[in-house]
Image (cartoon, rainbow over all chains, first blue to last red; front, side, top):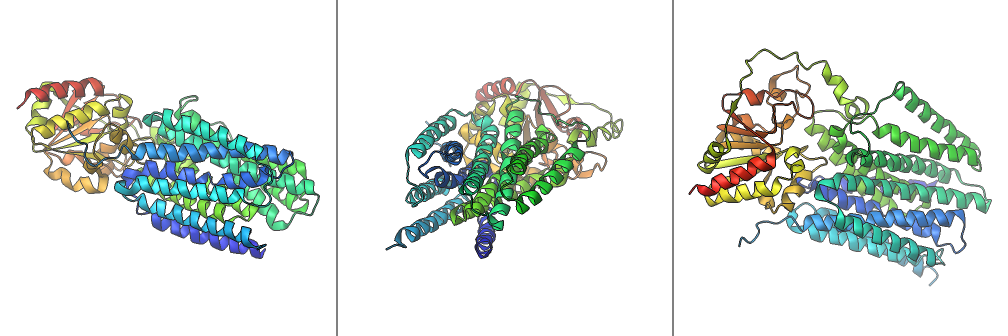
Length: 96
Length: 468
C-alpha cells in the first residue's frame, strides 16, 4: 500500500506540472501538441518491454509483443508526424 | 554494485521525464516547438534503453521483432498521412496507446496468476483500473477513427435504452471488480471485465456526432495518457506514471478549450446527441427579417479586396475540404503585393481537432505570424475593411451573441459582421453543419460570393493579379 501511495504522489505532482506547462501552449500549436503528447503516451512501451522479455514464451509475453508493436507505432508515428507538422510552421518563407 | 543497475535505470527515467517536461514547455512557441518534440523523442529513447537494462528482461528476440514492426508501421503512417486526416491519425494513435496499456495490464495479471502466488490487493485494483481505462480508450478511439475516416456514419448512433445499457455494463464491471478483489484468480470475472470495458468504449463514442469529434479526440487523448499511468501503477513504474499524467493533463486542457469554444459542457457533448437537442428550436426565429441576400461576382470582390487597407481571412473546414488553402495563400500573396494588410482569423473549432486549421494553413506555407486566435482578432474587426469568410458558417453567426433561441447562442464567434464589409464564399444558401440558418448572410454589408471555394478563390487570384 505504501508503494501505491508514493506512486499516487508522483502521479498528482506530474499532473500539476502537466497543467502548468501545457496551459501556455498557444492554440496554433494544439494539433502538434496533441500528436506529440500522444507519442509520449506510447510510454506504455516500457511496460510492454518488461512483460515480454521474460525469456519464456507464455501468453504474457505474446500479449507483450502485441503491446510493443502497438506502442511503438504510437511512439514512432507520433513523434515523426509531429515533426513533419512542425517543420511546416514558418515565420515567413523566402519569396522567390 | 548490486544496486547500481536499478538506480541507474531510475536516474535515466528521471532524465527522460525531465526531457518530456522540457519538450512540452518548448511547445509553447512555434520557433522552439520542433526542438521540443525532438527532446521528447530523445527522452523516450533514453527511457526505452534504460528499461532494456532491467534484469527481468533476458530475451530480446521478441522485443526486437515488436519494435521493428511497430517502428516501420509508425514511420510509414507518419509520412503518408494527409494533413486533413490528422484527426483520424491522432485518434488511431490514441487507441494504440490505450490498447498497449490494456495489454500490459492483462499480461501482468496473467503472469501473476500463473505464478500461483497470492495477488496483492493494490495490484488487483490497479489492474482493474488499467483494463477499464485502456479498454475504453482502445475501442472508443477505434470508433472515433472509423467515424472520421467515414467508414461508418459520422452522425450520432443511438439505440433505445442506450444509457440504461451503459449503466448496466458499468454496474456489471463494478460487480466483476468486487468478485476479482475477493478472488483474484477468477479468470471468468477478469475476462468479462475486459469485454465490458471494450464495449463501454464503443458505447462512449457512438453517440458523439461528427461536429463534436474535436472534444472526443481530446478526451481520448487524455484517456490514453491515464491508461499509461494506470499501467504504471500496475508495474509500479514511475516513468509510466509521470509520462501518462503529463499526457492526461494535456488532453484535459484541450478538451476544456474545445468545450468552451463550442459553449457546451462536457456532459452535454458526451450525453446528448447535438442534432436532437436543436431540431426543436430551428424555425422559431424565422420571418423576423426579410431574407434578402446581396451577391457579388468575383471581379467586384477582387476590386474590394485589392483596394482595401486591411483584409481578415476567416477559413472554415469547408475551405480545407475544397483543398483551397493553397489558392487562399496565393490570394493573400497577391493582396500583400498591393499593400493590403492580410491576417487570418482562426476559430478554435475551425478544423476537426484543436489547432487543425493552423496546420492546414501552415502546410500551404502561410506564415504562422499571420494566424490570429479568436481573442486576438475580434477587437480588430471594427477597423477591418473586408472580412473574407471561406467555408465557415456557424463560427461567424452573429445569432450566437443575441438570439437566445438559437441553438448556438452563447458560442464565442469571430465577429466578422463588425468589419466594414463581409464577403462570404459559399457553395449555396444551404444551412451549415449544425443546420442553423445564419443571419450574417442577410445583412446589408454582407456580400455573398457563390461557388466552390477553390474555383472562386482561384478566380479572385486572377482578378486581383490584374489590379495594380
